[in-house]
Image (cartoon, rainbow, N blue to C red; front, side, top):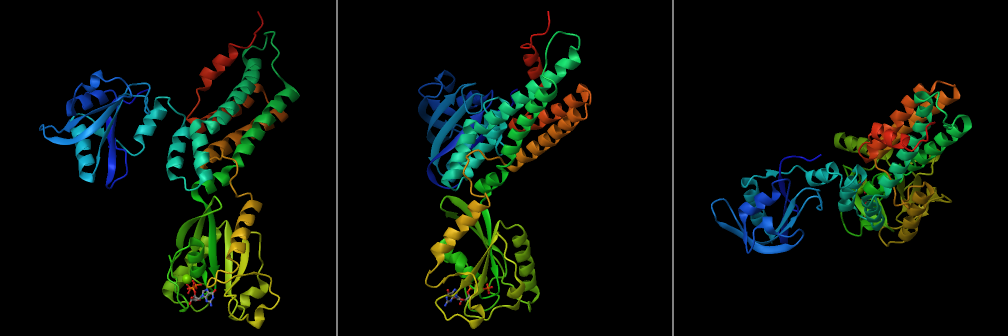
Length: 447
Ligand SMILES: Nc1nc2c(ncn2[C@@H]2O[C@H](COP(=O)(O)OP(=O)(O)OP(=O)(O)O)[C@@H](O)[C@H]2O)c(=O)[nH]1
Ligand SMILES: [Mg+2]
């Protein structure tokens, strides 16, 4: 499958730099290059993957820039189509003019992600690999980067294909008894069939268990700082970030909105949220801020509940229930402790002197590890994969229920087909008929 038209885009980020890269892909990519490039040789005569120096001219034969151009012939290119790469000088206007020249010569402006989409459509990569490209670009920690690289190399795709193969084999055993009931073959039945099924279910389940880690690798752990006004929430955010991001003042209710920043804590990306302080007598804007705080708290992986050690203990602390997702912190340990806090079990820190902050970071990491949120395995699925695999699991369970109830093979096969389709969606679809044909050709069916 190939898209027919030729696309072009500036592949480097906007702004000034040493070099900008303009890419052209499609059946007419080399033709487009031929119209705008002048050098010792014509691009149509270039060997694949070799760089050539030359000049780019626009339609009116005006010189735009001196460039280096290479031709990557199908199918040995990123997109699997003929691909031309033009490295021009990295000015915003220069690169825009080179792109314009390409468009005037017959290419069309590419949509976001279209080069990678074509790579997928042309079978250069499966869907998980295409998704890994964007993860790789966005990776903020070493582990996220490693995870993306491994996914790009096809580790997740491999696992998915293995599950597909096992589902196909299971289907084949069931289908064999439908299609060739009289033939002298011995497809698995009863316990052996169930064991096959249960093995597949377990594999899907263990991939599903990586969803939380996948979310954290891609988005970070959501850690929400909350508590009474003036407790030092914004000071804590600034401290953990290492610079003064948020306004700090001794006025109660300084922070009105939620503020989010990402920090890298020992390789774990943390999305830190500073929130509007909670207090009973709040005006309109503050109430809205507090509503936002509540919302952030609902989505938090971990809550840092901070109070001022120097101030009286807020009454709500009396019946406060601290769960595993909350760390209670008493701030301002450089000041005298109010008697209310005597023997109160909490981590004491000072955002002013930095005392206790290392211990806090340790505790944050420990909680993340305890809750199995600390990403370790580089194979971790994203939300799309999770949705596909959940559907697959449901269908598997239905098939299993069918087996247990002694339903006829046709019914069980329908559910397993559904499961196969859902797992296949993770990598971009499987052709069930084709795989079944190839499996059946291996079956030794009677004489
Ligand atoms: N002595 C002392 N003062 C601190 C410490 N941490 C914060 N403060 C001060 O306490 C005041 C309130 O700090 P903020 O960080 O603005 O408090 P907040 O919880 O964000 O307050 P709101 O945004 O109003 O809810 C400021 O004057 C800070 O300088 C600390 O550890 N020791
Ligand atoms: Mg604040």
